[in-house]
Length: 281
Image 1 (tube, rainbow, N blue to C red):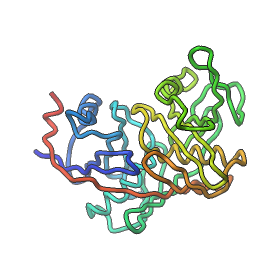
Image 2 (cartoon, rainbow, N blue to C red):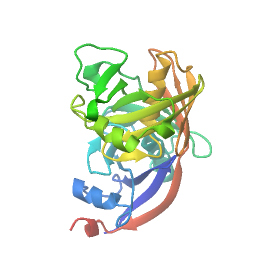
Image 3 (cartoon, rainbow, N blue to C red):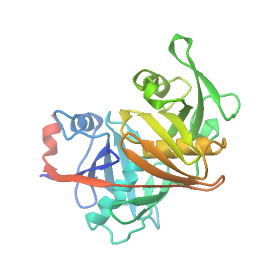
């Protein structure tokens, strides 16, 4: 039996999206790794799965698997693609839906030209909510890396954990060296997404993200939310900003105590069918 899928991306953060409402399939970590391989498989940052919801008054269940096969709680660029996928596949006629994730319910709303606005919920900052090991809650923490290098981080949970570091120039940051050290640091028991943020002015900032279980990606939606909120609550950015990533720009809006709204584009690259057994040997 051939499995239908779509290849999609949000600002270059790319996904294999599969409808498991009208189809049946099982994905184990090794199979996901093989599918994610950019030379021998489909190639993607995350696998997104559409399932029937477990909760009442919710339209869909949304599951996310990183390229290394690990399941994660949330993916901001992915949820925008998810919303467009279920609408394009005629799984719903609604333009605004409620989607169940491992971290709670999010509400994407389909706009024009493939753009999607998402209510990402409220950010969390307490160490136990990240989770992050710290004796006291603070606005910034010192994180010791290799060679006695200490970086200052803010920690934010946007449905998944983020460590945000303010830098003068993102192009000068050795993300390939620092990212893995932060991601797997012992103070993050569930690992973490490492973001490096450069403030341009009160309305604009640049961001690079080393994603947990993937590596550096062209864009990270939850990372953009986390970085924006981190800077906003320190008075470095206004309540509505543009976050520039390698793959393009996201609009982030947040007022203290409220929910975060993320708006950005989606794109369908192609649709395909495959024999999953080829990847399960």
